[in-house]
Image (cartoon, rainbow, N blue to C red; front, side, top):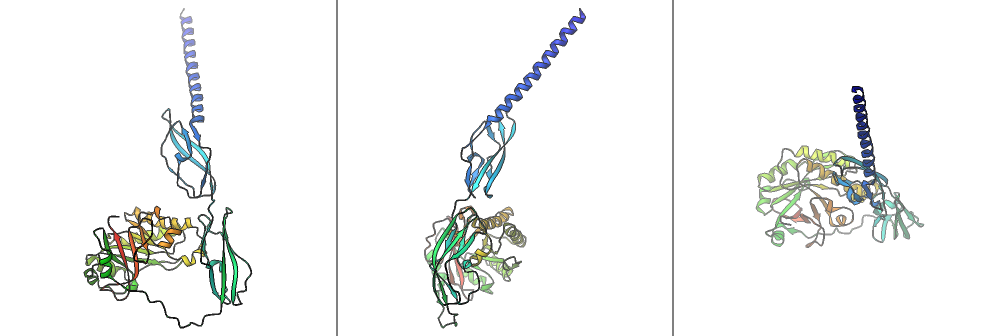
Amino acid sequence: MKKSVKIIITIIILVFIIAIAAYIVIDKQNEKKEDERALTLKQDLTVEFASKKKLSDFIENLEGELIEDSVVSTEKLGVNRITFEYKSIRNKNKQKSFEINVIDTVKPMIYMGGVITVNKGYDKDIANLIFSGDNCDSTPERKIIGEYDINTVGDYKLKFNIKDKSGNEASQDFILRVIGKSSGGSSQPTVQKKILFEDALEKYKTNSTKLGIDVSQWQGDINWSKVKDAGAEFAMIRMGYQKGYDGENVIDPYFIKNITGAKQAGIKVGIYYYSYAKTAEESKSQAEWVASNLKDYEIDLPVSFDWESWSSFVTCNMSFYDINKVARTYCDTLKSHGYQTSLYSSKNYLEKIWYPEEFDEVWLAHYTSKTNYEGSYHMWQFCNTGKIDGINGDVDIDVLYVNK
């Protein structure tokens, strides 16, 4: 009898174990099926280079929820594998992957007038005289189509063509004008109208604006007390600059004197750095250098990034995306040190090259009495021929919008 009970108990235990095992197997199978149907992707997984996308932009349906709807990088052309984590309907952390195809369908851009003038015997690449570039390709193919003789004076009807690695291309007809070497001539330089700071105050000073200046070593010794008395409320001071492409960082020789004098006079200050950076790594290093040299000073306005070497841009092997990344990296690095930042640029390049919406603040340069720039900006440099008591020579004058 006892033996029979033991057998029955053993059988029951075995049946229970088998049932549990079967349940586990079935549950695992069900979970696997759930995982297989958990993600439904959108049909079109093709995206443009550098487009702003998040994970959710590619997902049609997800059984569960994303742990983080993170930004998806679209900086690399071709097939990109995206891996992400989500919480399943069973409240378990799961991982999924899918592939997107990053393409570039944007044509390169050409910015030039109808005539390019060179001296007879010009021995450099004429294609590099034409400002052009691509959103994505740092080394697009540039070429001149047509016949010309650089050693013979005359006008030559030619075509400029630029083509990126994705096959997008743009062309523009132009005239190459070969002239005899200039003898220096006797033409007089254009005399620019001087703008008195008191006149600028009367014209631009309101309850929502402040008037100020920006300075560097080119203004020489400044009497900051007189500048303050003249009505200047702030100054953007050049802290330093890069000594040409691939060059070292250099402190502006008047920086310490300027920032000390301005602060002592009760003038609010911001600073800027003049860069020739060609890579994000380089601009990050420059930002760290700025932060290190700025740590002993209290500033009131943003730390600005200034890159203006457009005449040699075509030889820098940068795309428009590259130069924007250079500036963003500089700003992001300084923001990590607790500084406000801004991008300095002229209206022309803000409209054609920069992505101004990606920067916290924009310092606009547009030399006119009333700007028609339609983007957002917090400061406007409206002239470089200003005259203010305390400075010998010309100075840039700026309007700061305090409630814009």
